[in-house]
Structures are given as structure tokens and as C-alpha cells.
Length: 483
Image 1 (cartoon, rainbow, N blue to C red):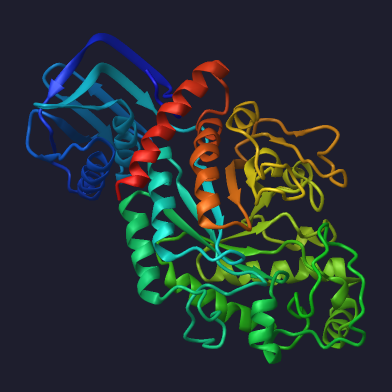
Image 2 (image 1 turned 60 degrees about the vertical axis):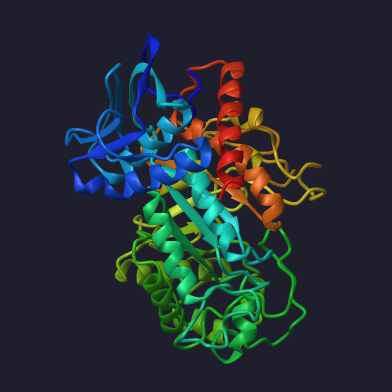
């Protein structure tokens, strides 16, 4: 049976159940899940599901976990069991892979399926700040998240190239012609919730901040003594005047907090706020009057310690606002003991702050290993195709970091950590490219990553996985083309 991610338990009998194209549930909790299932079954299979008995019934089972589900298909009916709307969504995504259209209704294999993920943090990240993605394209990514059982859609809204969110508190901030409206953000939230997907919005501080600094230099810009500084920390040279915000300016944390508060208010269903925190050109702080003054007043020994101090101050504010902050691994080890262990760290580069060290220091982490979980434009410095293959991802596991860059610790030999609950899952990242290119990479590689995070132990052969992968991505083609 070609299902991806591979379910934990599948008990299949010979034969098929020929059922009416009807769905029902006595539980109001599943109403939204049924609506989405109707829409997507029509787009993928051309099946118009109506309310009624004799087809698929969704039933409540409070013993099941958040994303856990059971499916039982008998000759007379099919029953889905879940305890949450999200569990119902995950079951529906499985049904979309095994159901077929029949003249009299639908057919399903006679089967019992029990399933739940090993890791809950299965995430797609898309960069809309460097390459603008029109609003409607974001909904297509959410549909893929639904079909592939991806729980979070992480959107990189802000970078040096543009500020793509609306802002009432900072009206000069949104980049002209490259930002979403409040109405679109409300629709994005509604659409994601209807698919059982949670948005993770990302702002970007202190680096990658040119769009913010140039819009409000009086609020964010360093007071540089010498503008000809040399980058001493960022792996990729973060060049460009005003590419980092001032960490020592009086009131800077209050300003960043106001910005964070506005973004949090725009995404009320999101438990996380990603604050960025990587690739910061911190040598500018060594040449900034305000940063020098702040370091002296607070007995901070150098800009690396100032970096962790800044991350601490911002993440503390996000925690006070009731959200869990996420940061990239970019902050150094100096002063890291001051950062709250409630902060979630995405280990990606294996250059700044290595995954084993983060775990040893008591952080909860996620895996966004550059290789094989990144997609970038073709001809990029990484690989000719700009991404790795689904086979590469199937041979990877969630406890491993690899990197193509000779400067990183994971270049010559992968970094592996022991199995631990402190590693929540993984993120597939699509960077710096147009929607037309990104969606192709996401459609293929995200499906493979979902399998390797849903099932941390490989239980199927590479050939079997690729066969299931081909089936799933063909359904994705129908889903995207029939909108």
C-alpha cells in the first residue's frame, strides 16, 4: 500500500470496499476537517463528498494523541478515529492517498491503519523576503503541508531585501510592492487553520535587517565610528551598510518588542515567533558608539558576548508576550548560559553553535541541516541543481547534520547525536528563489523529509520509499493544478 509517511501499523485484507461518496461525524470538533477533506478529495480525485452515511465516518476517541489516528475500512463503511481536529486532518491526508473514484462512489482497500508521528516538529520554511511570493502561492504551500502531514509553515517574512508584513505601528517599514495586506494575513491564518497547519512567522534581528534599518535609521541604525569594518563572525559575509541593528541604543529592545508584539497579534494561532538571530555582522558593533557604551555599562566583554546578550533580551521579551521564541544557531557560546532554555534553537549550519553543544547546554533544538534539507537557486554555490534529491533525504536521519561547506564542522564527517526528546524535529528550507522554482523543490523534497521525521527509524527499503514518494507527489500535482 503506497502511503507516505509510512504508517506505523497497516493490517490489510484482500478486497476493496465500495462505499457511497458520503462523510459524516457526530463530533463538532471535526467539522472543519471534514470541510477540507471534501475540497481536497474533489481537487485530487474529482470526488464530490456529501453529508450522509454509508461512506466515511469520523469518530472521536479521546485515548489518541494530538496527531494520532486510526482508520478501519470494512465492506460496509470506513471509520476514522481521532481525538483532535489535527488528528482528523492527518487521517484525511492518508485517505486521500488510498481512495479511488468509482461511478457509484468511492473505493477503499479493506485495511486497518494505526499511526502517529515520532517527531511533532515537521516544518516547511519559505523565504518570501528575498524573492517575493504573491499571496495566493502561499496557500499552495499550505495545501502541500496538509497532504504531506507537515505541521508548521514557517515563513521568512523579513530580510535585508524587503519587509513583507503590513505594519500600523511602523508605517514606513513595509517594502513598497512587496508586502502583504492585513486582509491577506487574516486569510492566511484562516486557510492554515482549516488545514491543520500552524504558521510560524519570522522577523529577523539583529542581522539581515537592512530593510528595517533604512526605513527607521533613527530607531535601528548603529552609530558607527569607522564604517570600514571587517566581518569577523558571519560565515557568509553579511556585507551592506546598516545590515545589522544597533544592540546598544537606548530603547532598542522596547522598539523590537513593539515590532514583535505587532507580528504576534497578526498570528494569534501561532505558538512560536522566530526572531532569526543568525549571520549577524557583529563587527559593526565594535565600531558603534552606542554598543561600546552599552558593553562598558554592563561589563560585557566583546561583541560575541553582546550577541548572546541581545538574543537573551529579545527572547525574554517574546516569552513575556506568551510565545515560544525560535532562533537560528547563529549566536556564539559566549554568554549562552544567560539565554532561557525555553528558547527553541534551529541547528542548521554546524558552524556557529553545534547541535551536540546546544544539547549539552540544555537547549531544545530542531534540525535544519543544510545538506540535504535546503533548496536554493540553481547554480548556487551549493550544488548545481540547487538542492539534493529525495533519495538523499531518505538516506538522512533527523539526528544527523551534514554540510557541503569546507568551513563547517559537518563537512568532512557528519555530526550525529543520540536519540533524544530534546530534538523536536526538522525543517525543510526553501531560500532565495522564485515561487515557480521553490514549489518544484518543495513538492518533491518535503515529502521525503516528512517521512524521515514522522518515522525516525527507516522501516522500508529505498525502492519502496521512492515508489510511495512517486505516488504521493503525483497526487500533489493534481492538488496544485486543480485549484
